[in-house]
Image (cartoon, rainbow, N blue to C red):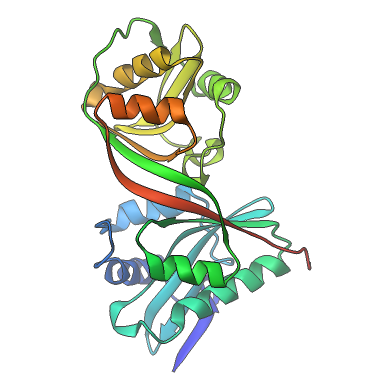
Length: 266
């Protein structure tokens, strides 16, 4: 018999959660099989909340999960899934309803998630649970661009974060938010015309500038490791998206950001 419980009270550890995740994502649209350390680091950086997260248990095995993060009065679905052999039994819906009820009780105002375009089953479930799309997000891979880079100088995180806030026209998603990446070992650059970039190991977390030429310079100076990956670029940012396409970037994922606004019943 399947039961649903808060992860904090389930009696299972993160290793059991990791095993369930590997099975659930083994046939995912985008290959996703992180090792245990990478999985733990991703949960930690995004603010994993064991009390807010829920697992479905069958016997002595975790068969499904909603891994949830908490930040002030907002929550975020880090990832959800059901083991292949247990799908079609309402596990995902039960987990989602349990997580939403817990969020309501805690006084959460908004519950956020992203779903990959083409994952119709997941998007359909989220819509049934009351989530609505807020914007489209693009993910790009870009080989090493090479314009003039002397206008970019290394800088500290606080200075660069302030510059991005000044020049940015949209809010980064949860995984790229300043609160999420503040503890990561980052490489930061500031542009003399206004603008900045924050990244780590070829992954660009945030970028913003006053004009397209500055964006191009910033991408070039960040690409010292070779190719760059930009995850969750707001598709409404026509300047950045157009530049990436001009530079030959490959858009490998399109996602929908979705949000559920909740009544405060605490």
